[in-house]
Image: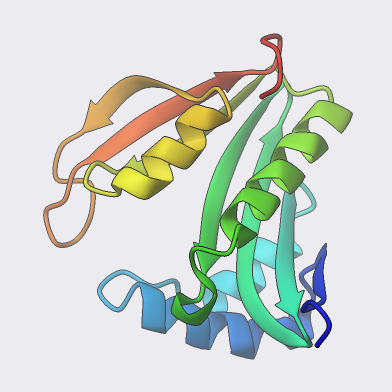
Amino acid sequence: MSAPTVQIRKMRWWDIAQVDQLERELFPHDSWSTDQWWRELAQLHNHYFVVERDGVIAGYAGLSISGSDADVQTIAVGQAFQEQGIGRKLLTHLVDLSIEMKVTYIFLEVRSDNVSAIALYSSFGFKEINKRRNYYPDGGDAVILRRDERDARP
């Protein structure tokens, strides 16, 4: 039996329905709307990607670049595909793009109780710079992380 084929590619408009469905499953209380996905893809400074595993969208990620700063808009991996390194592949792709685009800092927000995501981001050199209390609709706090691209890569 051969290993599954995993491919990262640019997100296109025809991916929105699948990504939107995955978003609602993963974030039922604060998922993005279909219209928001359309608006995000329309912005030239936004770079969104999907991961396909054997032709099925397993995850997605987005990076917004403004000048020398970038913001990770989202990284998500479907439940059936978690713990398989797909989140790491997506984050590597976003970091590589930021290096290519000469970004100095990458920022992101993550739920303070998302221990596995924080560990992943930390392994890429992201460091906590602040917290946002009650950031999420359910009252959850966010941790703001920053990666200085002048630092060595993991």
